[in-house]
Length: 445
Image (tube, rainbow, N blue to C red; front, side, top):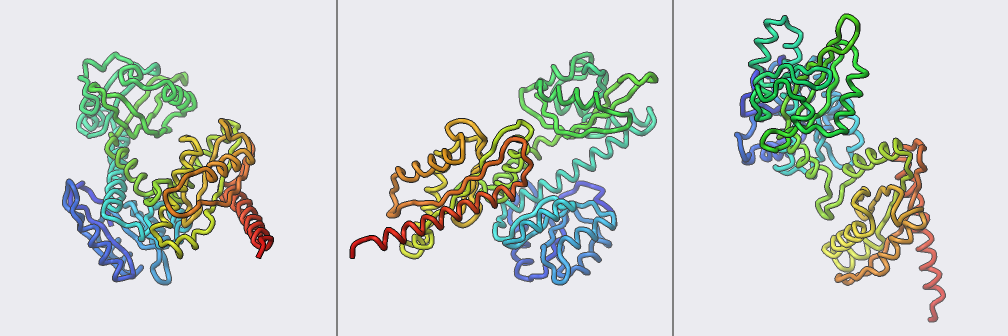
């Protein structure tokens, strides 16, 4: 079993699924027209054992594993291929309700997961392309790093031919050496770069400079630090490099040289952003879906904890959605959901994370500040906007709202915060139902 040694197209994909209908469906989706290349060659397996056999006897560019495979699952298959030394990227295909299991698989080394009910040619093509190209970028970077470990003669021979940017910088950023790939990516000639300052030539912002300075201060010999670096090319375009920095020290322990290796992943970054839009956005409302909300909200929680800032988690559940769907039809139900999403956008700021968690449930993660200073203020503002909203549709939009506060500095899991807001919402829903029953009872007959 070997990794693909070349980067030829069409790509080879192993699709593993024990459901014949799903096998045919996914094969058809992959066979759909690709904008700029041939469709991949798809090989299939319907059992765990058959999949392992094909992995051991052939090489592939990508694995597509269904999560549910009879007695064993896609996570078992992922672990098995990794234990056999196969580093080919894996995308997990999941059914509805399998998201938590899929996240566990990603922690175990899967490149991504896609719910089957959301499969489209565009989404699958983006996911496949991104997983394969990122894997190949890693291979290319590994080859460049290996070149740095060779003898000086061999090193120079390799770095002039390998399609990865390699440069040597003085500790202050002065450019001492660049290989041809640097000039190709940047648009600058070698003589224009040598002797210049890397950070100034490529318009590296102050925040990134500080981060790089921190990295080099903490560096130890032979340790490589990896991150994404955005530079401005000669034509003004922005290029993103998968960037490594390795420090070289003199006999006295002073920093002498920065050896940098970069792979141009600009197209992959653009693809990643497009893939995020496809994978984390709710199609009906345009808000983040549950997956997108959890990813962005978790990032916001970490940021707020670093900045010692309060957060509020708003949980809103539309009332009477079943009545709207049953009495007026699902088109009006969809209209209600879209109206609610518009109202949430108008109520909260662009910096707040707004998502539709599923069905008629919405959540908003709000950073302290602005006109929303406390739980009661947030609830009141949203209720007022609901009350004065003018609807074109023949229904009145009402919602039960729960707001949970995460004080600055307090360590709380996002799932716990979401549950706390959900519980508060449910208490309000019960109070509203009880109030409606009392009002109905007190009405004269």
